[in-house]
Length: 156
Image (cartoon, rainbow, N blue to C red; front, side, top):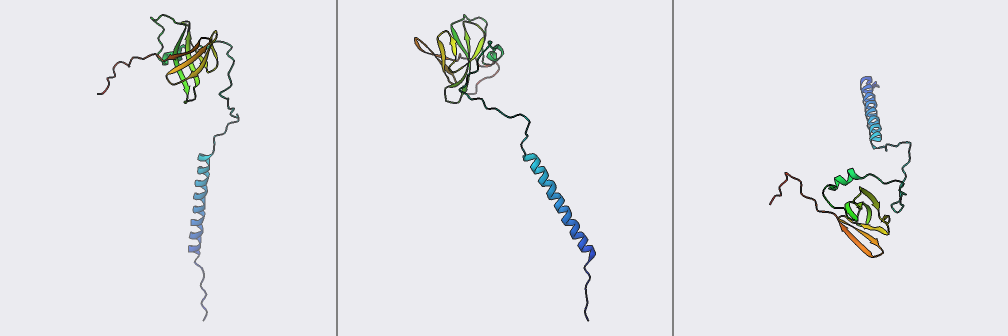
């Protein structure tokens, strides 16, 4: 006697449904993983600006609001030839931007290598001072001491 067994249709349908749902979940996870990991590309390309290039200045920049962030105070002090207001140093390379007040005027941004006043040239920018060169030699200007903010007491 030969007994043939008919496959269980219910078991086959359940297996196929589980396989279909597993594939759908895997496809959904893959789609969202690709969406989150893809780069947000705009139509514009990014152009790198070399740090050695100097932009020609056609008009002086008004950096008085920026100078205030660095602690500049224009009231009550006699103007000197060149005063250091702030620095934006570029690592330890001596490169960067210095905010200098020339002749008591508003602070202007100068890059290393630019002429500051007459024959004076900004030679290097460091985190707390700048070096200016002229025909007489080198002049080192340090950042002014800032008073600690009121209301904050040091812990001893």
